[in-house]
Length: 260
Ligand code: ADP
Ligand code: MG
Image (tube, rainbow, N blue to C red; front, side, top):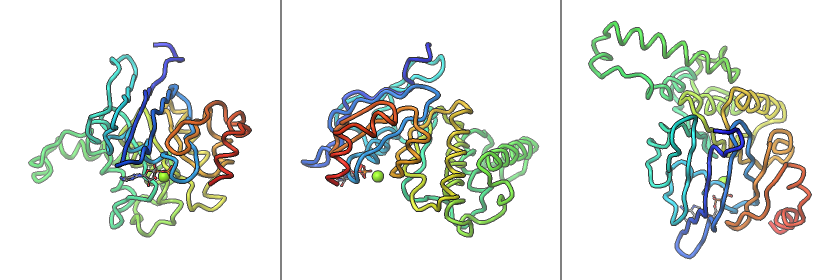
């Protein structure tokens, strides 16, 4: 497979809610190893696209195809969220969704759960297999926390972490799925400038680790600084696409934002 082939291909995605077309025949091609921005005014369909990509919504029409590694391309539309997650597509949500009473480490361990085979018996009886798997899982979870800069906070309950750290923990939990594609829905929303700077470094590290990223973001400086390519939605239509600078100066994009 050549590097130019898209990792993710969306063809003619239509998502209809009653009379509203939240996505109106949207095509998207996300190249492997890139950070692909998805921008647009409020209500333009960005989160709907995330939900279609991750199986929370089943598109009214159109297709979503993932071509990961040497495996045959796989249709994602029509699959359940957990099937899609196991295919290597992980996400964070626009609003933080963590297990608030669990520690940072435990939140990541929950994300890792899928990759360990131990049965309930193993868990209850504390078999050697279980103990070995638990050690491995903790080591991996710690490595992930270190990667997102939360190593020193591993034992802090999620609800006691500052908001910016909670957002990083969500990303860590998504990384525990060992994804090929990571979808981030407004990860910088509500963050302070130093938090945004830290987040930016981590998103770039994720891309450099070979994970393709789709980034929904309102902060234009973040989009400009990070995205290799940007697609712009407005009222469910894709109105522009290209390099970050190119898209920013597109009159259609400027008009869409001024009208919002
Ligand atoms: P964005 O994330 O770009 O702000 P959304 O994708 O959340 O926009 O919403 C796009 C449009 O689809 C909005 O008009 C929203 O009200 C509508 N919409 C999203 N989800 C649903 C739903 N489950 N039922 C009805 N309408 C929805
Ligand atoms: Mg949204």
